[in-house]
Every structure is written in structure tokens, then in C-alpha cells.
Length: 125
Image (cartoon, rainbow, N blue to C red; front, side):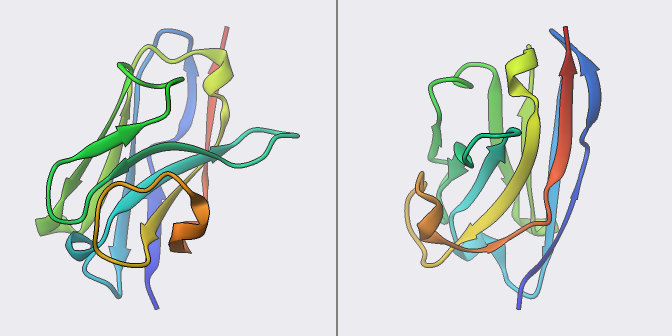
């Protein structure tokens, strides 16, 4: 059973930056795609970014492309989401997740089988 520790969220002004971290235990993340999703109040969970299991290949939602970067540190069994030029509409609870099988970046939540507890990101205008 994989367990995650998410950190790095908080309150930031529009235009600012945050870096989310997701450290895992119980599974070697390097063997699986990793993803970040978010859910704003009253909205469905949506895809943010993903990184492949065996390469640096990444995928991003159009809304964050050019502003967010997902990276993994296999030595630390950790995945990060660097968020720059934050906007109020980025306000949400952010979740990291690990894919079911080795492979490319994944954008659909059903392709992930373990999720972090979520961390709040609030961007003020």
C-alpha cells in the first residue's frame, strides 16, 4: 500500500510561485507514471500534469501549460509540481497520484490507483 506525504501548498498572491512535493513510501515511483490533479469548490477533479514512468516525457492541461512543471526525483521517490505565474483560478486542492501500470503520462483519473490526501493552494487576487 503506497502512502504519500504532500507538502508545499498555502496562500500566495497572483503572479507568485509555489512548489508542491509528493513523497511516497510503499512503492517505487520511478516504475510508474505520476500525476497531479486538482479540485476547486463545486467543480470536478481535473487533470493538471503527468510524467511518464521511464522517461522525462510530460503532459499538461492547457490551462497550466507554460506555467507549471512536473518533475520527479527518483532517488527521493518524490514528484514535484512547480507552479509559476499563479492565477486566482488555480485555487484548488491539489492531489498527487500514481499510475496503475508503467507507461506514458496519463490524463485520466481512472488510470491512477493511489492518491495523496490533497493539499490546499489558494491564490489571492
